[in-house]
Image (spheres, rainbow, N blue to C red):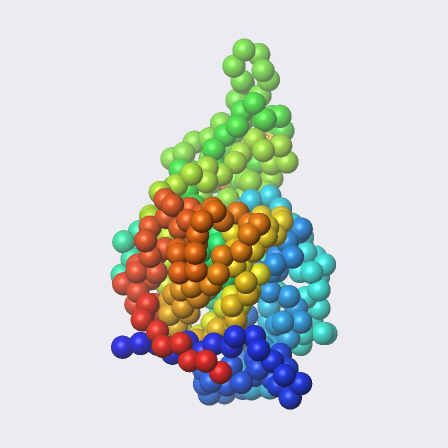
Length: 375
Ligand code: SF4
Ligand code: SF4
């Protein structure tokens, strides 16, 4: 059994320019048939960290929102807070970053709503069926409570996951701070005592009372201490520290990390009675994600835009199209690659073969077998 993935190769004409091609692409998915009228529809997107230029741009998004509005849905653009310190670590900075990148509600016909509240703590606990890591996951509340779910995804490389597409955007991107922390680390924050100024701000944020000041060694004044038995991994302390006294240990077993991320995607998608729509922009294919604060040179030419109701199939199709494309230099790609070589694993040879999609398939999120149907 295969899943259909609809594909537009970016060719356009005066009679059928961009917006018309997107409308045709989305029509083919029959997603509009699941809209009765008035459904609050989460459109999960990445607004791009400051300094990034390769994310999905507002004008590229507008025909998708027009399509949803015309079908009777009430879309809102959404994302959840990040763990790391940047422009998207809480809702005020995040919404301002979206505005600075041009995500204007009046232009687009959809407001920006940061789904996990002011400080990333507004969440729902959703069940995970069939997972080996979790039975429940912490999902941003306004994504969990939306009537319909659409993911708009920028397909590209990713420094940890190897590939960032629909499932990465859904699994990691829909998690609250606590959910992101749970996927990244299992041991709580890592203390950098040389950076700690002993201000106590992080201890004041910790509802679990896992942090407290204590006298430092050799008369170095007060330093923070962590009681790991109390830490629930909520991530609130990262936001409080302005001195990098607490950091995330990003080093992790990548295969297990991908499994945890896929289980979070399952928590978002499994409870939904109606189909979810996924749209992958296989364009501006950078080696790293849109969180990095810069956009490096692309590893291959733009490939196209894909739409499907199956997030596994659309990610597999996107990976295959990236790997089939001619490599581009100058870029971060190693020299000597040819069209057809695995670019994503050439960038990061330690990655597991199927980049976690086989596990997503085992969780019942979709199938890696797809039929690519060109417009
Ligand atoms: S870790 Fe940061 S927030 Fe906590 S006491 Fe030290 S400097 Fe202050
Ligand atoms: S992650 Fe949460 S529970 Fe753990 S120390 Fe930080 S604030 Fe406390």
